[in-house]
Image (cartoon, rainbow, N blue to C red; front, side, top):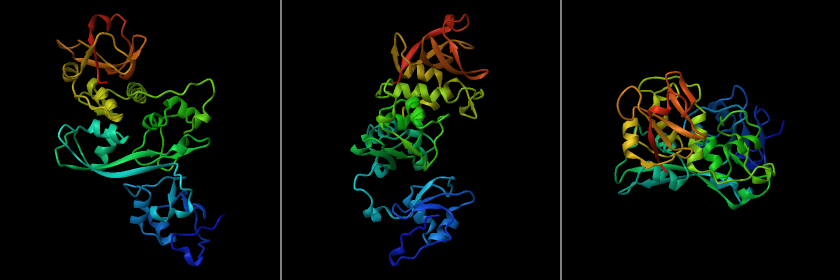
Length: 322
């Protein structure tokens, strides 16, 4: 087991009883089974609050194999000057005309992340309001062979894929992921050099991010009025998915139909509307292409064919949020 130099080890004190795996050069600690922030704090003589601040933790929860920095950000002088990746925290003052989706796009984050960070329960913001923004910063060295990214609190696979000009499938393939789940402290390969030569690198659009995000919830149950993976109704599903990738849309099928831009032919990521149990747009889904759409119906979130005998005569039209 390697010995670890703590942030206060200027005198050369070594902690041989430290249970985690650490690098004395990088001052990182790898969380082991049974660890807690408190016992790591006791061993390293670093306060829990410092550990949380230095590692951008919003709670006391840590995960096995998570990498924790044991140095304050300004003491990393021994590390290479070209930082591979980091989360930048800034305070933003809301101006006239601002929306959460616009601010999220500006700072490379998501509406959900901004709301969680600032304890917001709705998308409503007001002029002069101060928001804490955690955004992903990527240096030029990120394109170098072998570059990696360490997952931060609030990250999701689709947003990271867009940041590094990859598709979600490419990012999963590069890192041998079998699901879209990532965890804080996980180190991901993000360089184009890791992608098979036959797989083109593309700039992932918000529309593709919507499609990728929507497919994560296939099998989620139906719930009238539901707007979370625990249970969705049709418009609760569409609004949840769009908000997850930083695009704010109205909550109900009727307001989505009336409030978004009409398109004659839908593209993947656009919304498609149907008249079902009531006159007008009473059902909505997300278009996938090839006359398929994904929707929260009576049997839960599933993919359906727009050309089948039930949906085709009920189709009303499509709208886009892009």
